[in-house]
Length: 129
Image 1: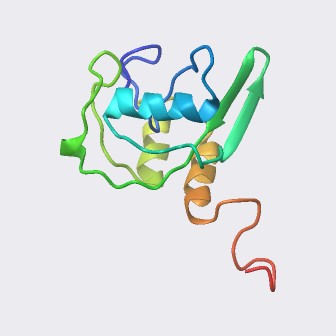
Image 2 (image 1 turned 90 degrees about the vertical axis):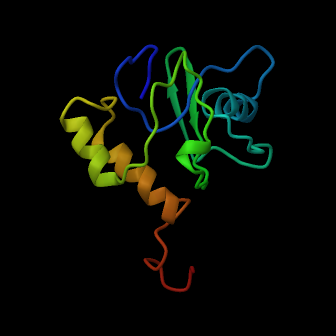
């Protein structure tokens, strides 16, 4: 649960702005350590998605980790609480106003990309996979 800009609402994970001189992956790596206390090497990870807007862009990294929630070190200034949630739960929380108002199809895409990264859905194109 976030404390800052979207105070009191749940979000998909960590986030933040790059500092001067940071690459996108360096910012993601730093934010993961700062907000949840998780060390992960992003240097060989590419963003799953990039959203461009008038004043910049957001890179979205999807990584597979399964930490014990009790082992996380939360940045109390920004993170009030953490929990695991499946797609159905998150979509319900959005509808109930408990989660950042992401477009439901974006949440579905995040979950789909966990299983099938890239443009193609495995098994849909004969001979591709």
